[in-house]
Image (cartoon, rainbow, N blue to C red; front, side):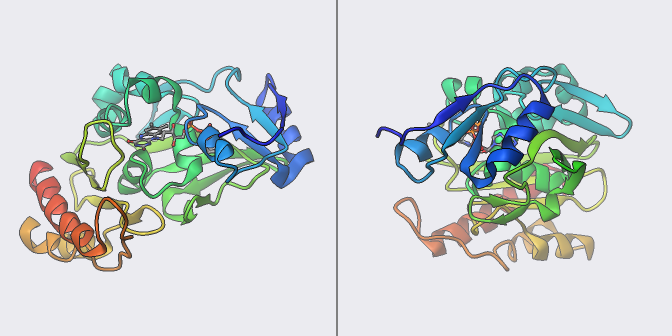
Length: 273
Ligand SMILES: Cc1cc2nc3c(=O)[nH]c(=O)nc-3n(C[C@H](O)[C@H](O)[C@H](O)COP(=O)(O)OP(=O)(O)OC[C@H]3O[C@@H](n4cnc5c(N)ncnc54)[C@H](O)[C@@H]3O)c2cc1C
């Protein structure tokens, strides 16, 4: 449980961070809250030669409304999001789900940018970003680019954020319709065995699934059924179509498929569909 030796840098600006990442390439790893990276390093599943601690970068912890969107700084911690009055009004599902992540210690260290950049299919906030049809802003050596959530999650712990890029902001549309997040776990502080995010803006909602494949995925068959006028009950029956859930100590593949259908129905009903 002791990480391999590494060098440590604590840059004071986004530009300095990006130039360190560009210089060291795959050998460098960004450290935000550390709640996913440090366990991987202790297990020696990650052995970066340089850890770039972005914890002291200024101006990356904020939530503000910009037009029809809510902009969230990548270094915003779950505990800040849970308490944010701006989110409570403009995108309440984000605040609610931030309050369901792990335990108080995790919520006081973990960041929304870290959660999304890490790309764990069992994480909660990536599903919310996907259901809402949000996006992320990253800064790299060539400047800034925006990645839609639909193109972000590429594989297990793999995202479209390149090793030389820093994720600086997330954007979600302001929500006006009903929403729901159904997280099934055995104890309140556990990761989801399966979870479902439903969110939208009055029309057919976005529906995203946690832990039902190697990445967070949309329940596309359910979304299509809803758009064609199906009831919540009918749309939920196809929730696991196109998924590829794992079997592990917590649940078999068949049980996860069952959970997805049950949780999607509950979420759609709670969201008013
Ligand atoms: C006991 C425990 C329980 C947990 N329970 C849950 C849970 O119920 N639900 C849940 O969703 N999560 C859970 N987590 C994970 C937690 O949410 C992590 O905080 C999160 O996955 C990663 O965020 P972080 O800020 O800690 O990132 P870090 O661990 O610092 O980084 C994670 C990865 O993302 C990269 N990264 C971080 N920030 C950026 C950035 N701005 N730009 C580019 N790359 C970046 C890092 O290089 C690293 O590869 C749990 C963790 C623990 C330890």
